Length: 129
Length: 455
Image (tube, rainbow over all chains, first blue to last red; front, side, top):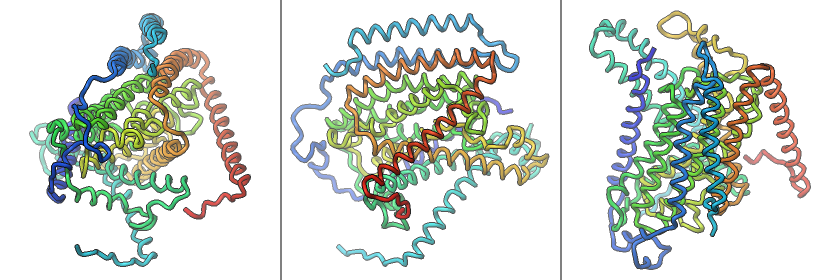
């Protein structure tokens, strides 16, 4: 059997190799490519016209922020569901969580579904104003 | 400037060279991955240390190092394999796309333009690497690494064959979902750091889209997990049968719906049409990668197309029985292995067969993705959000609950899953035949002939 370190070891290697490969290719491109910087080249691309005044990093729709909030709520819920889904049903001598596990998670998910209905009725999910 | 005139090649030589390379490439890559995956395990490493290096593997301090080198080689090979797969996917997609649009497409570099991906890579290596003056230097440079790391890390957990996997994690599918998020971080960084309006709009749209579709995708994945009772990629495949009517997608009616939800969500997560709003060329130029040039651009491009292959491979793993070869039981692999230090030839044959099955399935799903690209127009932002939160999320909850009830039913009446498998599989076959018949009818109604010879 593999120890946990041996099982997870390839991930560390993959991270190093992936970053290494990408760095190698970018370095190679820097080496082989021409280098003729100019003022015009280093301005942001706006379809050929002079860039409009002001930073692009201005205020933008609060909708994006709300989506991020919703994502966190539902993604955390998914994280709770993963281990529960593995343990719920009996397998290989393990009895499973049974009806107690089913009902307790059912209450949790029902609360979230109620939350989804609430934000839906509040109009949070309507992107077009 | 001197003009370079390339010699006009003999078309027959060109075809021959292309065929040789196109056949040698998978043989070399698959072979290397298979051999390394067999070697890079503690037992073969222990045998190697004992027989070749004449040390006791249990007490010799460098056994771990030897194992590390073997695992490193395997990972390196799998990443190379992933990059080549992504590049060939680009070629294949361009060929299919051009046929779907009645145009010629790649046909210059090699027979059928097969070497175009190499030519493109070389071209992008020779381009000027520009960084906008007002860009956030550090973040702008870091973004491609995040994207490529996310891409490379997924390959470690993909089950290519019965024993061909770099790391069969007990949290497999969860790990895959987690590292996919690195790509989003890269995209958001790229959009923010470019200091360009197009790039920022693209990055923000992409972030909103990807995190939204993460929810239905994550919930749909729960269906195969519930059916298999494990998160391990190999475990999920082993819980399915080899024949189509034993696949998860057919043995549970809710899983069929879950597959559709998962598939749509994955299309959106990899910014594929019809969900390519973040880089909608007619609105946002190129979205988050508008300011990228040379190989930094190539990395984004490669990862995007490589993701098509990855999402197909994950769908095959979760819903279509993975590498399972019809007619070969799970015990057959262990039996064919033999007692020797090296596995018997029959074992290698089975491994190659399992890899071939996995790749054929993945290839078919990949073609579905390409087909969708040229079938549906791009949807609007509000439609995209509506589809996710008002249809897919409630739908995914429903399939999740339905699967729970289905599993309870199957535990009482085991024949239910077989009945469902056969009925749904036959239904799918009938639908496929009907669709092909209709397509033929439509072509002939326009006075055309179905002609596949001009490929």
